[in-house]
Amino acid sequence: MSGKKTKGSGAGAPGHPDSEREGSTSVGRSGAVGSGPPGRQTRPIIAITDHPFKGTAVEEDAASAVGAELRVGNCRTPEEVMALTRDADAVLNCYAPMPAAVVRALEHCQIIARYGIGVDTIDLEAATTKGIKVTNVPDYCTDEVSDHAMALILGWARKVVVADRATRAGRWALTDVVPIRRLQGQTLGLVGMGKIARRLAEKARVFGLRVIASDPYVSEADAAQLGIHLTNLDQVLATSDYISVHAPLTPETRGLINAAALARMRPTAYLFNTARGPLVDEMALAEALRAGSIAGAALDVTPREPLPADSPLRDLPNLIITPHIAYYSEEAQDDLQRLAVAEVVRALRGEAPASLVNRAVLQHTPSLADQA
Image 1 (tube, one colour):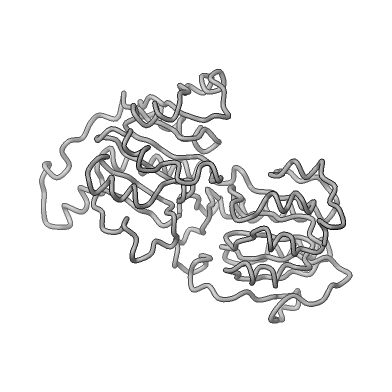
Image 2: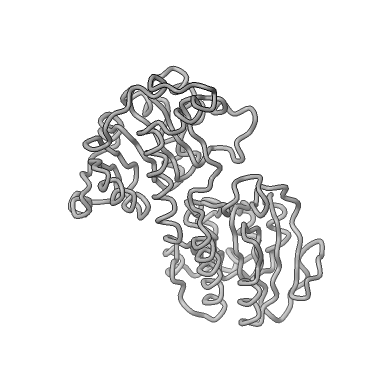
């Protein structure tokens, strides 16, 4: 999901993994609930650590098709994940953490399939060392997230939220939104040029925006074919009117938009993040918004989710926040569930995955020590 991520409910809404989540449970095909995974059985075991869907009919049908037992958990901690998945042959994972210790404890696992795009919940190195394939669903919400990012850009460009707040407060005046500049001819800067960023660029150009981007893994020729001028991050920060963050979350990109990066932005510029919350330094952004060193920001993701009551991002008038919903549409949810489960079915049938993340696993033969 771009994470993401949640169902069409936001954090705290029914069906969302962050809503009134309780400890993990184990549900077999009979529907009986136990305190943890049973002993090793002859048929394969599919374990769901957590999920954001209305139900698990897709998973139940898949388990039946491959003769597997299905366990459904609502895990929040590594300990709960470990208890549920230790003897599983396949794991479906959404938000529940799977650090190295959890992955190393897996005794029979062939695949960890993530409900989403990013795989930052899973220790990839540990999975590769164990010979476990990790898959994702790389393009299920490309339109949804790019639509949401464009909506946030338009929201600030036309100051829709500012005008709404002022009108509801009893005012009816142009002065509340001055100045507004014509969108055509302004510059949108992309931090990262993955599928979502490229789709956003297409939509932004329809509004007359010039699009520039920084991405160390993309060539100038490839960017030019998409009508995007490739440059470096400093130039994106210094010359863009709107900056939209689309980088993956890695140790290198965590805190990428920090105080120094924000200081390079124009005082009239706006920052948007629909990717991963920790890409942006929470305290640095709050300070920049309070000081007016940038004009405003819009976030669909935050470093801590749900946004805690003590977050410095609360109550800032020049910040728009949505509760990690950019990925959502009914169609995207259906695609996410179906495509993630299909990877598990392929793995249990001995077939190659469609969207393998840790490709190095194909060259890795785990030793007995790795499997222990």
